[in-house]
Length: 236
Length: 363
Image (cartoon, rainbow over all chains, first blue to last red; front, side):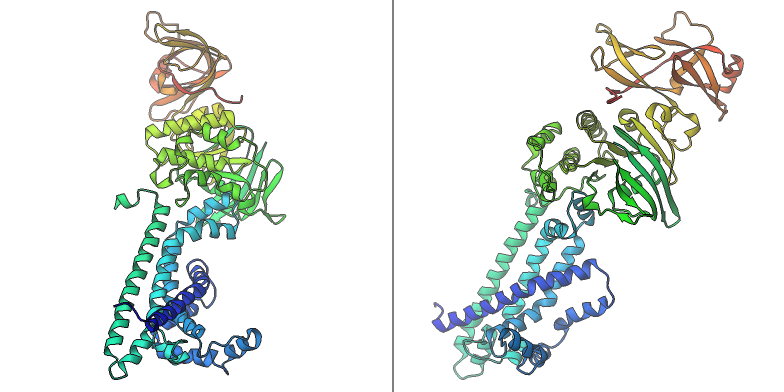
């Protein structure tokens, strides 16, 4: 039972949306996590709450807000179109945006935890060796946070693959453009005789999720070994 | 090279108010835990910001509150060896040693890296990860890493504190090598007398946030009036001497110092080599006449300079032997029976001498 061309297209679109959502939100998530873990500024609590909103809001609400902000007449949507000629409404980029926003709090939480776990005395040691603030971040803080960053990327990726409510509200359900795996499965369940294709796509989703878990596990283990020394595995 | 520190800083109820200068060689910041030693070197490294004062190394101002100068840590060029190595766990030993090269624009002298690696015996460790090193190895790598940042001053904060006795003496040897081979002034924080006596050229004695005395190691460690501040140190004398003869059959060496000679067993040094020995006050007895037929090998003639205050029935007697001052701890009753007083000619009977280091470094 090989996947059909249509199924492969759905799969490809879902991967594209999820991968882009992770890559684009990554730098913002790292910046947000760093500022939450290491700095104090007025309104920090509010910022923290705002970062976590997508986690607690109904996804449809998030999608609706995105619609208000990024729609043709939304304040951000207007600017994007005027300055860059970019329209995200009803485009796969919009689906990626929705997935990125929904996965953002998960990514920030994982990265923040790993920043907080870093021994700050190592950073002080680096600065006595001539490293300025940015250099300390790039050569000590970031490498030591890698396992947490990989974990955050996986969580956000998985969230993006499964994203449904915000996506369908924001960019609708357009075949070949915004119809990702969950949307396709939902569509099939709404038509007569769609049971079999829905099941096939669901199995595909299971395989994809397992593969993602596996890849991330390998990456986290590698990064941890790099940090803890070669025999880290043997010590467990 | 000179280091001048004159800083003040309030930390809660603790007040750090320290002023001292140090020159060539090894300067030991000595005092009990909580005396403010680490705060001082943190201020020199720029990790702790003093409320006021100034820090000057070799003419360049690192901190001056009146002129608003506060050079940031990365540009201070001080090598800092922390108590707990603080190696970067994600880098190999080589990566740790090379770390400072990422940020220095100066040209590394050819062979410098190899020299440091050889000096500290790191060749076998280069490709290993800090997680797999022993405590002593970690500390050696940390010292090498600090050295390779081409510092103008090396700060060591109790680098032996987390090591067992065996590792301690190993690292001490490396630090001695450093002192003799690398011409960088070293500021060494310690609360262990053995380390002071073995390494120090200058001692800065710290107590309750203040530098209460600064001077040559021999002078500071011998002063009985400072005993309160330096309590871990039992009164005694530190003597710089030179090996003049060896008796291989009995495994004895004769050491000459300004004031006489001492015969000492188990000296691992060649004739002509400088050594430093410590004679504890409790190992010195006093006789008015030169005793005959006695097992004690070292009997030195001298004159009493002063008799310290009585403490629990015990007094410390300072005896001038040549230009060296020995200390003897006797009971008050013995001092009275012998009618000891300043100026009395006596013989100091030295029961034990401990060799503290071979080669006292730059004189």
